[in-house]
Length: 85
Image (tube, rainbow, N blue to C red; front, side, top):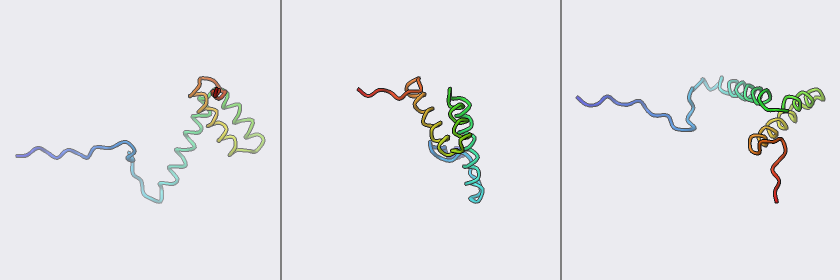
C-alpha cells in the first residue's frame, strides 16, 4: 500500500494549455493582439499615440511605439526615458 503518485508539477515557462500544433500559431497571434490591446488601453497616452499612428497608416510602427512607451512608463513612472548621467 504505497503512496499515490503525485501529478507532475508545472515549472515556470511550461505551457499551461497545449493545443493542436495547427491551432497554436493562431492562438499565439490572438493572445499577442489581446495583450497589445490591453497595453494600449491601460497605458496613459499610449492610446493617443496609437490612434495618431494608425490614422497615418503606420500600424506596425504604432504597436512598436506603444509598447516602447509603456515599457518606459513602467520603468520610470513617466513617459520620458530615464536620463543617463
